[in-house]
Image 1 (cartoon, rainbow, N blue to C red):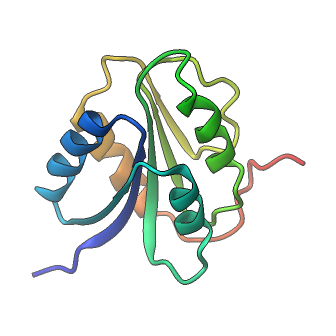
Image 2: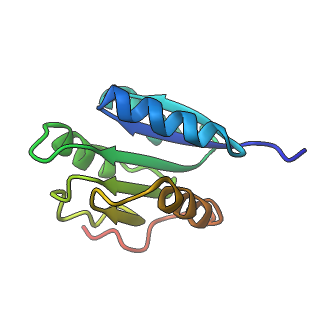
Length: 130
C-alpha cells in the first residue's frame, strides 16, 4: 500500500470544504482542511510541513475570503499552490502555480491539478515577481 500524500486544503465555505475534503479522502491523500486563514497561512509557511501541495478554494464572488486568499498566496509558501476560483473574481493570481476558474470546475479537474502539482519538486517559484 502506497503512503498517502499530504495536502493542505483551505476554503472559507464550510459546506464546500466538507464536500471537497470527503472527495479527496477517497483518494490516496491525507488532507489537512482549514477554514481559518491565519492557520492556513501558518501551515503553508511551515518549513517542516510535508505537504505535496496546497489547494485554496474561493467559493463566492465578492466574498471577503478572496482578499484572504491573496494574502495566503503571498505568504511565502514553498509548496505548489492550486487555486480553485469558483467565483472567477481573483485576478491577478500570479502567486498560484495552477488556477482553475469557474463554477464548472469539477472534482476531476481538482484531482488532476493535485496530481500534476504533487509531482513538482519543492523549490523557489520561478514566477514570483518582486
